[in-house]
Amino acid sequence: MKNVERDALSDYEPAAPSLPLGEERRPRGEFIRGPIPLPWVAEAARLRGRALAVGLAIWFRKGIEKKATFQLYPSALERLGVSRWSAYRALKGLEKAGLVRAERRRGRSPVVTVLDRADLKAEGQA
Image (cartoon, rainbow, N blue to C red; front, top):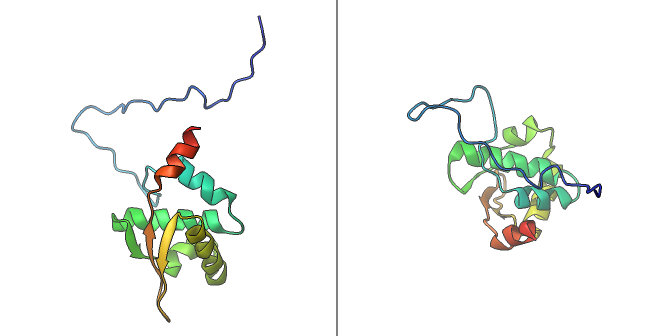
């Protein structure tokens, strides 16, 4: 019998909800609302600097706003220890990678749109 090395996530399937129908569990405290596409996170993780932290701050704000386009306030970035200059560079990297679109306005927080890239899904499945 051959010793076959397997990836721990190769046969992963999310568990079915364990709560009875009609009952809803409400999370306590702060959290990042998902689902966040793993290929999106993987692409952000490949970028330089604080891009992943800025990406997580963006998804945090997206969960609060419940829409794809919103203003990215410094408070969301500060929670993850990202300075405004690092955030500016990381946001440019996320834009260049095609993960977000940002509209910058002098003296104001940028307006960010999270992009749904179908090609990221295809890369993640390959």
